[in-house]
Image (cartoon, rainbow, N blue to C red):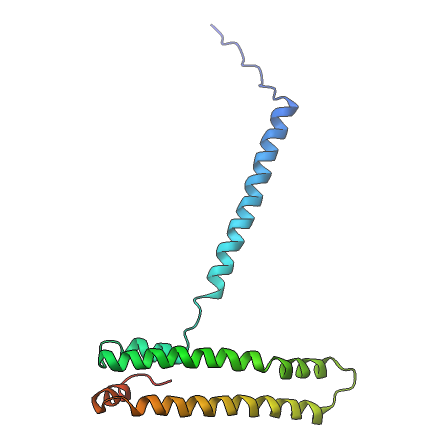
Amino acid sequence: MTEDPVPPVRRSATTMWLVASIAGNLFLAGLVVGSLFSARNNAGPMPRPPLQMMVSEASGRVSPEGLQKLSQLADELEARFRGSMSDSVAIRDKIRAQLREDRFDAAAFTGALDELNTALARDRGAANKRFAEVIATLSPADRKQLASIRFP
């Protein structure tokens, strides 16, 4: 007894186009999902502001009142920092414009950088003064605990 050979299965053109379409859609979906995950993972976690890190480390080590004062200060100074960055946009735009010029003017460029540094130093000085004001209201025990943690 011999077996009858199985004739090859013929697929219709519609079936071939359907398989190709599904494969193409899966490929595109993989690209989109993969790019979303890789963009999120490559960026890493958002860095925490230094004062927020200090507040996290102070949690459980300083009094609840001291922790509340430090937390409010961290929020206040973060908002101040964001505001100073927004205020310096015009100076940063001036620096970028100077970089685009065909003829580079080193003196004007240096002047704009100095202007930016002065503005940031002025803001930093005000933040330091506010930081000292809040630290002065902490108990001696809370200040000693702050001395033992990472400082901003």
